[in-house]
Image 1 (cartoon, rainbow, N blue to C red):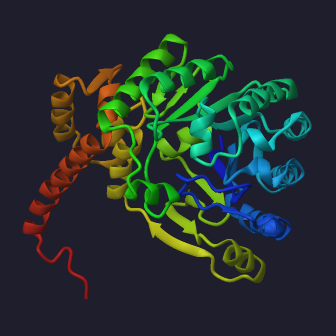
Image 2 (image 1 turned 180 degrees about the vertical axis):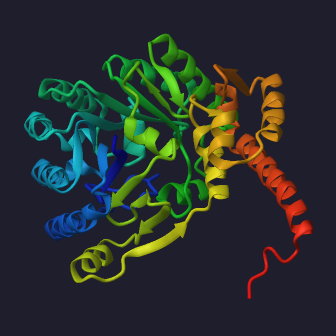
Length: 401
């Protein structure tokens, strides 16, 4: 069986830029779309031979706003991917969309082209909150977009929501969840609002804009976990909930440290044992691809020890979690110090073990950054304790002329 590969295509164009957004995206650059399409097609063709031995089982068009880029361009890109790569017939093919930039005609075009999963950026059911974030749609447009997606044939539909918005209280968040569940999505992503440096939102916060405090955000999160579970959505990652069998296979690829290739400015890849990213510059990316110039922003060969850290950091974002012999067998490191710490987390109600696998509870997910940080410190300490005796026996073993 061939190795499996995921592909990410970054579409950096938006109708307008939301106040909280820190992704590489641009508004007012519609004139660059055709040249960007040419660059993407050239880059896909150039890269595909490197993965000729692999089968593509997930493709994800993210942004930005891919739906704003236009269904004909997206269809052409997907056709090119199928021509250049070995794309499985049962591949999960996702397109991100905003409710204001889709209609029944465009969605039918995408579904006929082979897109079989759509992720709608709804964010809130409260129009006042949407306006405050400078979202380009209202909630009725979200309802209309869901209806159009279903009529177009999409039976795998995800909705993105944000909690902890300016002026949002628990009643607002409960109403957003209730109205969103009434849309009958198959998957929900619920993200706590994060204030990123340099965004318009960060400037507003610096000027005195107040946000729900940490305790209220935690209550909102725990309410969502409980309410979605009652509604048939199981939590499979910190922020992601799905009906059984409707988990995002592409996003799981990131958290399970499986290989993927990205295309577009700012896109990241983990391929061939190397992690690399492209420059966050639309014109630089276009000219670099079309003239053969360097477009790499960063590139690192990842040693097994660092991969072991990624295993902890990423898999503990999921309810799949980690397992002792999987860890020992893959990274040749001692699990005992980690298990000791996981047992202490368990006593505090932050972790649990099911079928031999450790994962965090919802309360543990709230503290996951700190909990994972302590585990990685334990891992580093254990690695040094293993290495030091060897260095003492052979002090020249690490010497290079």
